[in-house]
Length: 345
Ligand code: SF4
Image 1: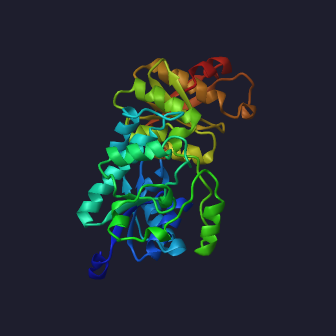
Image 2: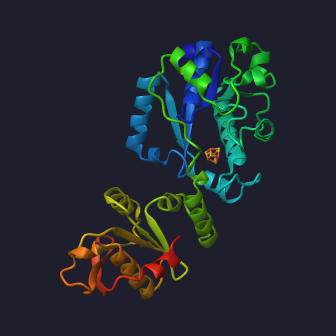
Image 3: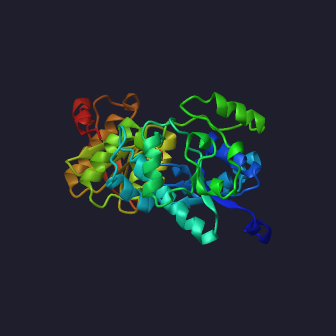
């Protein structure tokens, strides 16, 4: 912060990248508050920003498009524990929304005291989300985060109890808003008022609210006690299978996923690719026997373009790579689709 900034009232805004957080920033800025926008990212939300170059682009775009100075923080490691052991349980799927919010507020509280900010703000709107934005959930979040009275929600402040910064006159409650519920009309009008045209479409929640991925994550977290944030990224790509109960096979469904699988596969994974016939890239993790490799090769073979085979019914050669070296070639028959379905994760 500059010397000038330090004289101003300042706050930490939990910034999600959505319209509500953009508007919250604007409402606060309009009252002369120095807003420090922090975007937390992890393997489950904002994961495209885990790459440094994407982070830099995002910071630049946010500045150019909305005039918002953004700080991005990766909380993947700590957040995985929240996903595994949420004190307040899950929403409809594997989403621990209440614990997630408490955790983020606690983090913001630390940053707030480090930079001597006056309060925390969020773009939440009472009644907008079923789990974490009910009035009783907001009360739990305020109480259990240790930030009671310090969390200002500018878009719906008038529906909520007065906060400390309002009491102290650091911010004018009269100029805060009274939006509530799931509609978007008020936000769209407000965006027009601020001249914000190009903003993201509403997102339904993070990857933990996806029924298929959250079911898969649940199985993997139970199975692998050392499940990592990197594994959580892998769980979001391609077709997935569990082979012989503990080996984990991932197959790309298109060129983009094939590239991503190769990028994400760590040094201990095997990469499988058919020889002389178009087909997916696959990565095999946590294998411990030859049979798992052979079954994986047969699954990969099934998803190759079999029409391109010179002789119908001939075997398919699958190259197996370890750390970029082809360590063996397996000649296999495609596995029956019914058997494949039984292995699907
Ligand atoms: S949807 Fe995901 S990111 Fe949003 S509050 Fe719930 S767990 Fe957190």
